[in-house]
Amino acid sequence: MRIIIAQDYQELSDRASRIIVGLITEKPDAVLGLATGSTPIGLYQKLIEKYREKVLSFEKIKTFNLDEYYGLSPEHPQSYHYFMRKQLFDHVDIKPESINIPRGVGAEPEVLCQEYNEKLKTANIDLQVLGIGNNGHIGFNEPGTSFNQETFVVELAAETREANKRFFSSIDEVPRHAITMGIKNIMEAKKILLLASGVSKAPAIKRLIYGPISEEFPASVLKNHPDVTVILDREAASMIK
Ligand code: F6R
Image (cartoon, rainbow, N blue to C red; front, side):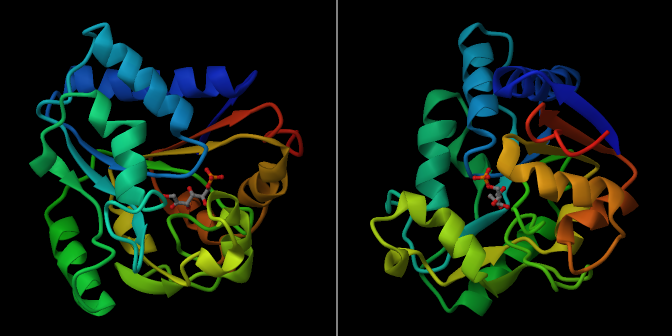
């Protein structure tokens, strides 16, 4: 794992955007794996800026998102479909048919998983952006998930629902299930870019770097991947030497 420590969130976002701009410049039809959550918002803002400055175009880019809450329609303001439109897709020239996100409604969850997993089999993701949960989750692969897991319906851990309740009016509104790429799908990306910001992520980053590879800490699987870049701000890096 290559570890980059940025001064602050702005620099973290800028460095991450430069990696993606480099990839798109080299390969205008690159396939990007994308994440939601607070951490990549600054990265998406930088990418929108670069698009406006005509440094890059998303016209030939394809994207695959990590996850979606089960039961939320694409129009629901807390759905990850909605998040991606507001934070990135509405502001760049990506073609709607090039955007892939698990469907959260429309069929039984197992059917939705199978549908997304089929798409992922031929996706050939060049670079997957990841955040990290305080418990080491990547995507919604919570502790204890098998490293061989493909797209599946996950029951969200209590701590994950707690961490995400800030976006809902009450904890009861936070969905109990999500559809997520499995760890096996994530590991198939050619490159991985993991971002972590803020002091609350420091213990997870410490465990990622110094801890063993274990299904009890899902992000630790990334040590088995040949091309991972981790970008931290100083706070997230505060428990590593
Ligand atoms: C998002 C995702 C999650 C988040 C993680 C960190 O698509 O799959 O794994 O990356 O929960 O979230 P934030 O960035 O909000 O701290």
